[in-house]
Length: 502
Image (cartoon, rainbow, N blue to C red):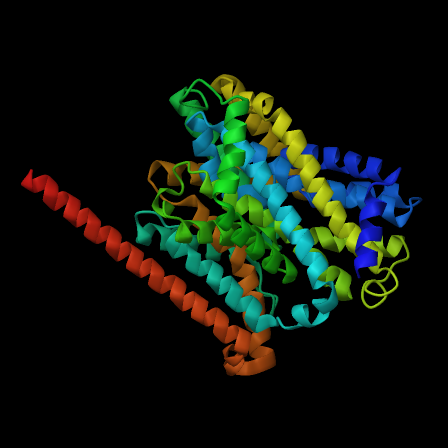
C-alpha cells in the first residue's frame, strides 16, 4: 500500500498531468463562482476532452475541476448572498452578514482555508479507507438513509432562531414543497395543479437562488442602499485573520470535515446535506452558537470544511463497487468506462495506485485553490463595494442564468421569481429561510428511503444496530435543543427582572 501511495503521489507531479490538474483547478474556481452551475457541469463539459488522454492526466483534469468548485461557490455566497451551488447555501447564513460588516476578506480567508483542510482530510480518509471500503459502505441501508434524513430534519429546531414555531412552519413548508411531483411508489400527481413542469418536482437551485439572491436584491432595491454597511472591505490582513480563525477553531473544522466525509460516503445524501448538518453541528457545539446567522466566522468554517471533504468521501462507494456517491461521481463514473477502468476489485488491486493518485489530486487541488483564492481575496472582496444600482442587475442576471442553465427550463425562471418574493416576505417578517431549504433537501430522501425500509424490513426497520445509534443521536439532539431553549428563556426572564429592579 505504501508503494502504491508513493507511486500515486509522484504521478501527480509528472508532466503533463500536473499541468492538466492546474488547468482543472482554474476551471473549477470559475465554474464555482457562476451561480447555479455546479461542479457536475464542469465534469460533463470536460469529459469529451479526456477521450485521448492517459488515465492520470484525465482524472487530474476532472478531479481538479470538480473537487474545488465549492471553493469558488463560497466566494459568491459570501460577497453576493448568492451560492455558486446548492452546497454553498449554508455558507451565506454567516458569510454574507460578515460582508455587510466589512469582513469579506476575513470570511473568504476562513472559507478557502477550511475548504483546503476539509478536502485534504477527506482525501486522507479515502486513503485510509481503501482496505475496508466495501464493508463500510454496505453497512448502510435504506433505514439508515431515512434516519439520517430525520436527523437533518431535527436540526430544524436548532436553526429556527428565536421562534421555534416559525422554524417548524418554515421547515414543514420546505417538506411540502419537496413532495411536489409524482409519487415515487404510485406515480400519482401531488400538488402539481395540472402543470406538466411540476411532475419532476421543484428543484433546489431556483429555490435557493430565489430565497436568498433575489430576495436580497429586492430588499437592496427597495432600500436604495448599498450591499455593505461598512464602506471598507478588509485587505490582506483580514484574509490572514480568516486563516488564523480556521486554526483557532481547528476542532470544529476537523469534526465537520469528518462529518462531511461520512455523509459523502453514504450514496444519495449529497453535499447539501453535509453542509447543513455541519452548520447545525457548529451552531449546536460552538460557545457562540446563539450568534450564528449574525455573521460569526464559525458559521463559515463549519459548512465549508464539510462540503469540501464530502467529495473524497463520495469517491469511496464509486471506486469500491461502482455506486456513485453523488451526482458528480455519477458523471465521473462515465470517465472510468471511457478510460477502460471498472470500479470494484480491479480498481482496488491492479489499479490501486490510481486510487491513491485520485486522493492526492484532491489534496493538491484544494491546496492550489486555497493559494489562488487567498492571493486574490483582497481584490475579490472589493466586488462588495459595488453600489446597489450596479449590484442589483448584476446579481439578477447571474441568478437568472444559474436558474435557467441548471435545467434549461423557463419554468425555473418563474420559480426563481416566485421564491424571490417568498424569500423577501420571509426576511421582512423574520421567518427563517435556511430551514425551508433543509426541508426541501431532505423531503425526497426521507420519503424514498422510508418506503424502501418498510418494503424490505417492514415495521421493525428501525431495530438495526446503526439505526438505533442514529435514533439515539436524534433524541439527544432534540433534548439538547429543548434544554438550550429553556436556558435562553430563563436568562431572558432574569434579564427582564434585573431591568425592572433597576
